[in-house]
Length: 166
Image (cartoon, rainbow, N blue to C red):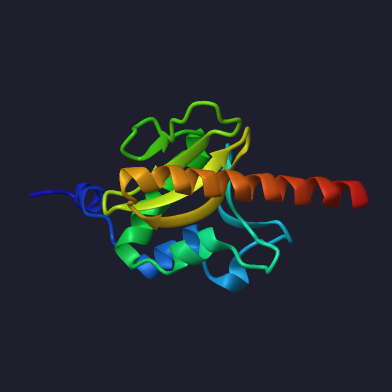
């Protein structure tokens, strides 16, 4: 006969996925830290994941994640948790660099097994997410990378202007 402790470890009580997501990812609008430039998606001791807020106040990365079903959100949550805790995702099945020659900004994608992608740029202490999409065809990946670079350049310029203006 198994002890209660062994059973609890092997079969921990499951929290409903919507409670897990709101508790860890804070994807509900009222619980999210937002500036004029970024919306926090997930934070940990090593890194933070933020979404770019465009000039109209829209954060496409956050809205994409919030629109996913619970299972897909849970896959992203697991990756975000590990990324923000240790600072990287080693497996190319979870995160990879979009390889392109002659570019100044390296774009990464965080991936799920169900074919969802979150495109962004990795900085020293944060991942700046531009937007998400279903798995694109190989030719479309470069377009998503280019869009991410443009969004990133734009938000960097706005951040620089904001810092200059005080």
